[in-house]
Amino acid sequence: MSMLKDPSSKYRAFPTIDIPDRTWPSKTITSAPIWCSSDLRDGNQSLIEPMDAVKKLRFWKTLVAVGVKEIEASFPAASQTDFDFVRTLIEDNHIPEDTTIQVLTQGREDLIARTFESLRGAKKAIVHLYNATSPSFRRIVFNQDKEGIKAIAVNAAKLFVKYAAQQPETHWTFEYSPETFSATELEFAKEVCDAVIEVWNPTPEHKMILNLPATVECATPNIYADQIEWFGRHINRRDSVIISLHTHNDRGTGVAATELGLMAGADRVEGCLFGNGERTGNVDLVTVALNMYTQGLDPQLDFSDIDGVRKVVEECNQIQVHPRHPYVGDLVHTAFSGSHQDAIRKGFAQQKDDALWEVPYLPIDPADIGRSYEAVIRVNSQSGKGGIAYLLEQEYDISLPRRMQIEFSQVVQAETDRIGLEMTAQQIYALLQREYLQANTPYALVSHRLQEENGNSSVEVEVSGKGQGETNLRWHGKGYGTLEALVAALPIKVEIMDYNEHAIGAGTNAKAAAYIELRVNGERPVHGVGIDENITTASFKAVFSALNRSLSQLEAKAA
Image (cartoon, rainbow, N blue to C red):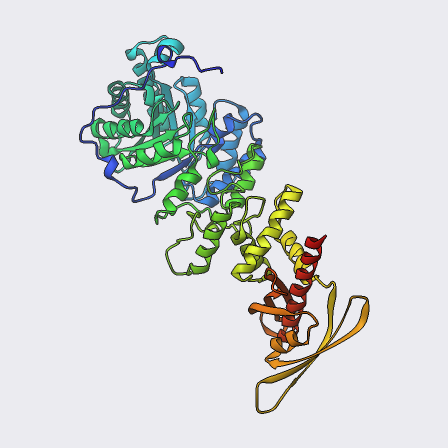
């Protein structure tokens, strides 16, 4: 068997951070952060085929509709397409009053000048500066020492002040990212950020943004939270700084790192819808927001039509959302397992509209994000009686008695084993019809007539039927109640074990469903179903259904 190589000589564990009095482990998220989408910049740059202007505008409008208030629209100096898109947003008035456009640039003066030019005429804008600060980037990419890296940030920050002054009609907010923050020595990250703060001179009334990226996720989420808490404690002029998170998902823990970072004191989150972005992607804003929602906290983002949002994202990104993706995947609210289905069905039965949500296995009410309940339970070879019963109840108002659920689940199990596929509610109902409602051999009910005796509960019944080669069979019976009279009339000894009935629908179009469990000649009990506008007719049909099924099973057993 092949083995992974010994990692100890190739990889180093990330060092822990000494904060003996760290506070984030005992905190909870109590308010929504400032949300910033980088779908149109970071997410767009990571696509095999970047979005054209039409798709970018469609995506922009979706982000605005969802309620994202800060949207990083492009890297204007990177291409004419990105520059023109920013101009379109400004000139065609696509930026609402409560929404701020954000753009990204590196520290070269030609790129900064081009970036500010793209924003001419904007009422307000965030301009985002970044340069990498970690040891590997200093050594391998830039061949610069710490002073050289800091000088890049400081010189670019001064250029921001210069070019912003040329457009005083715009309300400017500056953002700085020490790229690869999570892999940078904390003292040096602070040193660079403090130097930028001195240039931009933010105030509590006009704050700047310090974005602290886990550009490459390199440690467990608690380490990132420690980094954020340490930074918030030590950065200069904390009251004039918005601390922003920008996590990636290289270790698969981008959401966790973001949540812990918010507990550690961050104010803002940058990410992409459904986690698009370079490599394994940026943090998924939808998951972070809906995680808050399921804890009783309003995330200030609207995903009440999550499938509509997904449709736009998939068509613009040309990347399908995974069926197991949290909240939005096709299968995330779906149970195939019999025990899961049974618990979900019981949960729905007791759930009140004005009560806390307590449906087992469903952390969120699918209706809150625009999902129907139709796909919650789906039936395959792993499913049990609860799922089958749930689908029939939801789609056809058929409420099978418990013991019949057990019996019918075996019928469905045999069919799913045979076809090797999932069964829809329509297919399950068709199987119910074939197995029960159309069980009309060897005997079929043609008509019946009742006569009740005045003064007592005795009922006399006359039944017309066909079967056994006869087309005009007539049976007479008498008993205390219609079913007893029918049983007395039948040519075969049967014993009714259980009976249930309920209405299907309401008003003039209502029908009755009747369920019989009976035993023929002392054999194993068998169920039958009858549906009709008349409850007596429905119950008689159910008796014939069960009788015929029992006789067919006895014949097959004998053969």
